[in-house]
Length: 125
Image (spheres, rainbow, N blue to C red):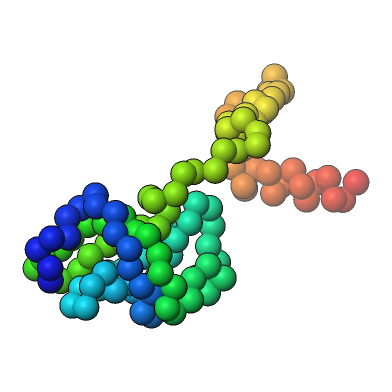
């Protein structure tokens, strides 16, 4: 693995292979890294082949270098500006509070045995 490749650097590489989980990118003759599918672009990527093909020259940012394992993690997304959202950021929806009314004679949960007797009586009416 080349010593000159450092985390955070932006390099130009060539796509050498595509798998369902990511794309392999040659950074030089001896060094290759992986762009995980989540690092291809901003947003959801269903099929990498819609974004990249073997032979494409791309700009990548080095996310991680693992000398021991011989792995380099790359990102295309980190070299691009995030698109501005047309709407305000979505906030989680608030669910309306459940309204629980209790009868005067009910306390807590009824057992299934008690309710079964009540249901049988109701079905006979």
